[in-house]
Length: 206
Image 1 (tube, rainbow, N blue to C red):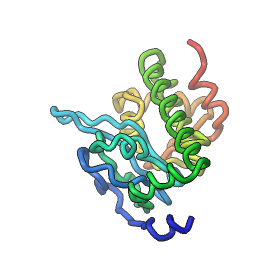
Image 2 (image 1 turned 90 degrees about the vertical axis):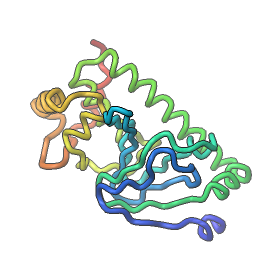
Image 3 (image 1 turned 120 degrees about the vertical axis):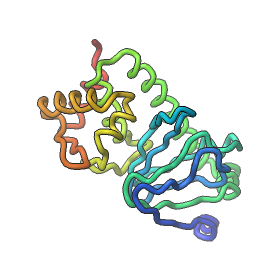
Image 4 (image 1 turned 120 degrees about the horizontal axis):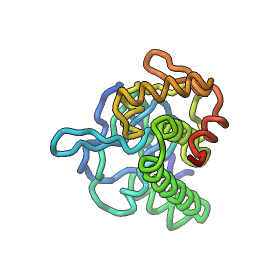
């Protein structure tokens, strides 16, 4: 804790800020103190793909730091956000010195790997409404995102990118979920009304 207090620092970013573009060195591990960010990439033909939305209270970016490679994605603030920066040297020192910290990072990587495997399955096998339900309910993963609030500051376009759907299909899926009383759609956000049923719907067998 003393080493963290000496080395960690905070920065604030306005909504829409590209905090780190793709290809920048992975020289910090991040904690999102407040706000919301997205992890995405843009193809050569200009198509944007969002890999994950990260709500406040979450740590992220450990994979790129461990691989010692440039970040394969961009980090963009969706809302005004405040980040904590842990230098790579401090992160690696904690791994070598603290068994409990190492276990936490292993758990993070395990849950994150499981999320991406489920995401691929979801995009290939599920209908639009189940895909949207999955992407929204996963923002409440207790290991990765322990402090997510019920109101998610996500636009329909962002939800579509998370779930791999067009805006039209996303809008239709959100209406279906709203009709089921699982969520409500407000201007610039989605409010989760029944998380347990939303998760159940996301994972139900077709």
